Length: 614
Image 1: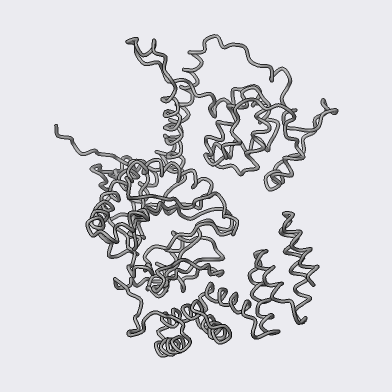
Image 2: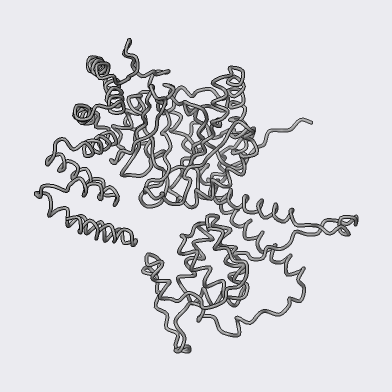
């Protein structure tokens, strides 16, 4: 029996988790009727992340030994994670009878409070006093404090809310708080978040959170969380003057951050989190890969960090491109719920910092963050970072002393246009569909997996100008680890076609990755064989380095202007469609009037700016 568990654990330790899980499932099914050993199998199932099987094995352990305290403790955890309060209570009652302890009593007492079971709570308190186990004073049985009346959602509001703020599909989290210990946290509930649970959250019956990264690696939203720093919060509890100051600073900071974000093209939903800060939500027009949103988060934090001062800190969701070792990632509390620590309901805020009284009506018309806006923010952040790096370069004293006009900005070492003009990369990308796809993905989608980045580094890095080309793509993506960025051309052998297929089978299986190199039969297949030897020789000096740099910058600007023109035309079409549905064919935003006019049967968008008075 235990030899089988050792074999399974060895497989997991060697990195073959799926085989270990498969072996566990097959062996566990054959042991259901066997008596003994189920607790050890349950603990192994938890190690493998097979929580459903772990719960079954703990139940079988109780079947064999009703006094198994360890099995009871774990089953209580499973019941609480699922929100099965009555089952958790029954298990805790059995556990308290078998092994009375302050921890078990407190958990049971807290659940009685949540259920409104005052007689049971008082009875438990009497038992604890008789056993000498301390519990909170029970002079008055208090319901959880709620500061505002709950908002009443319609069914359509629930579905819209889930579309805006939904997270991972097979799990959500439930907040808990122990008043006696002053401690709280979240427990995962391994079930889909349905409109029924969401309604309970919005009515204040429970408080729920979500894990932003969905099973396919995408997200429906991003969020910026701004909080009072823990040290400042602890000091404010002892100083009313500081508490008042923090409240005022938070209001001012919220307005500054919202303004800074709008200047960057981002329009957030601002929320008072109900505890010690603000949430700035960015619902997406379409699901976006977490890696792209992580890069966006770096750009956003760079924008708001200078505003925070000494009392505040911020964090971004999603925090990472993929869930952590536990497989869920970081969670964030859903909007409009009650914070269990304070009893305050979170609420959306308008531009003046006042609570929005009709939140569901407000959510029907909130702007959604588009991919075009995300990429524009990333581009500006990348250019700003490059400008800061250039500004830090030392300037010779003799140059400083001369009264001369500033030198033109240096040409970028590589641009997207260079993939088309470089003979080497024309041949490489023209011949290798895989590298062509990865290059297009980095440029157009601004994302690469870790394995995809490795493949680019270990092919491009062996070519003239390949270091600049690879680093250009990595700068677009923004989430490529620093150790993959190239400092000099690589030596040794480039990655082979076989290893490329092994690393990214999901990509190569969709492409014609079966090149035949007839002229190089003695060499192992690698994408670099598409490049003719004469193309790989270092290019001679350009006739005019300065002129080439200017032309290259012009081509880059022309390409960006063309892209902006396409985006502008698309936005104009979208606004025209919306104005056709409005009762009045115009809208005023920030002192600018956008008016729908029809000429010769064709609708046009006219933009009128308010006159300025000097």
